[in-house]
Image 1 (cartoon, helix red, strand yellow):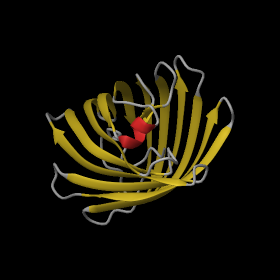
Image 2: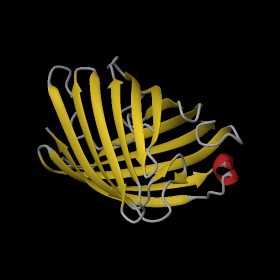
Image 3: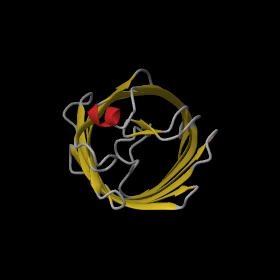
Length: 224
């Protein structure tokens, strides 16, 4: 699934509208969980996320590789993210390839976040998959809190709704998920982060034989 506005990347500073900005984030997650489902038979996932932005436009290249399962995935995304005061909408196009098997997919996503309060940011995003001919909708509430000059915490509670994106057998509530990211900025443009996640399986996930999931991740975030 598209890894854009709602992915809780611990940005150290907002991207400016006039400069060319580059962000690089190597990470490891104990599971590769997406849409409330564990995508790997066993083990976790190493990943590298590179993001280049200029003005309202951004290009993202993400690559993930299983640490115990023979799985590789590469996603290339072009996105438009204008800033409209307290509203930050986005629209994106993503091309995905996963191996082994050389499976390809194209996705279109749109959504946004609205800054109600500094500690209360509701969001919505919808992703359409050409391969599945279905849509996945994510409703979220996010909060950001600075614990000190160099330490911050980012939390998000979300509800996923599946309409043929992951399962053709059932439409509607898919899962609920809690994400918490703790970030430590130890240099002006470098930070370390650790993240914890828990997903509660909804009817859609349980019908596919899945259940609740818990996992964690660690990584480095560089901002240039």
